[in-house]
Image (tube, rainbow, N blue to C red; front, top):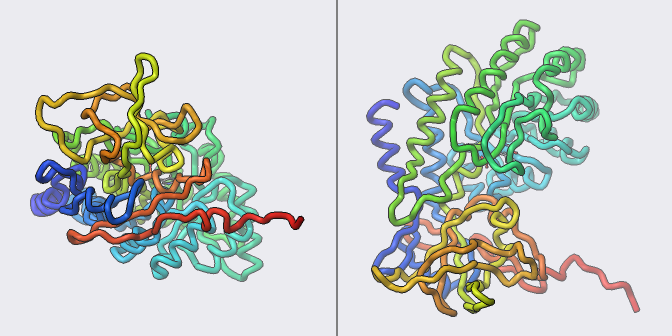
Length: 445
Ligand SMILES: *Cc1c(COP(=O)(O)O)cnc(C)c1O
């Protein structure tokens, strides 16, 4: 990165998170979390608009100047956090979107319609109505994950009288060190098409007039901290692209997927994680293998853009002792944030009121009210000696938090507040019990 761009980016990304203690109380970009709990109740998701924009711009900047400069579109992965207000924010800044369902397509349309032309559609199980909606919206690219899907896409495009731009999502058989549930780039996973079979499938596709073989895509998984696997996967894709071009295909797009990870263990008060450096390393690793390659680069980051901009604000209901174990029971549960239960994920948890140095601490499981032993946010965690009524903040919950909520235990989903220019605004209200019962039908009698 040239010096000016580096300085600009570093001024932008001064901290890994938007949360800081001010006057011994946690704030989000100058707004006190106490006041948010007062205004919106708990549990509540809180996001920093500033940080979401900055993270998006880190990617944009990294590929806009210097050695990594090349035509590119950053297609934010909607499933990480699909709130309309966040999609609009990113869409207005020029983001494209990586979607995985017809529902997400409608979200993009609602949030920022012009961004439809920058949509890539991934997913192993696309249905006819979803394909049709995306064809009619004239999205940028279908990331096709099986031969059968390709023929379905061809027949739907023909029926609608359009040509479908597609990329095969290839499976590069690259190992990425992450949780097994979010690793996708090995032959044993359900994702993509074996890269060794791809060339033959593109040949068959060439005979189908309703298909435009426009790119190749790859996505090896999520929460990947080292950049090596991304470069390794790209090298394999590049060799396929060279073959495809020899075969006469007009390949214009290289979709390198998403998956760049953050540091969930980073301390808020003594932070070492440098997001700007991470994106810089990622861009450098990709651009090294992409040197001299003429293709429009698509990237699909999700987590990296929104995870650290968001947190889940909760209140302690009870502190209880079972034998030798202490449990801090909060009003947020696994239905509000399932990552610890689903992926054994680590989240830093902080008291909203900053403890004095040397104040007593406790070691406890921080748990929710849901009737599952998997309903925990942290186990054997040492933190300030919190009491019932105290507020706690679960950090790095902006990605795969709200988008993975459920109504399990008939619990209404939490609201979401977005902090913009020192002011908070609800971007989703708290669900009511009436919302929950809405779709249910009671047989007469
Ligand atoms: C989930 C997903 C992403 C985003 O992954 P992150 O780890 O959130 O960056 C990108 N592309 C595809 C195809 C995905 O399934």
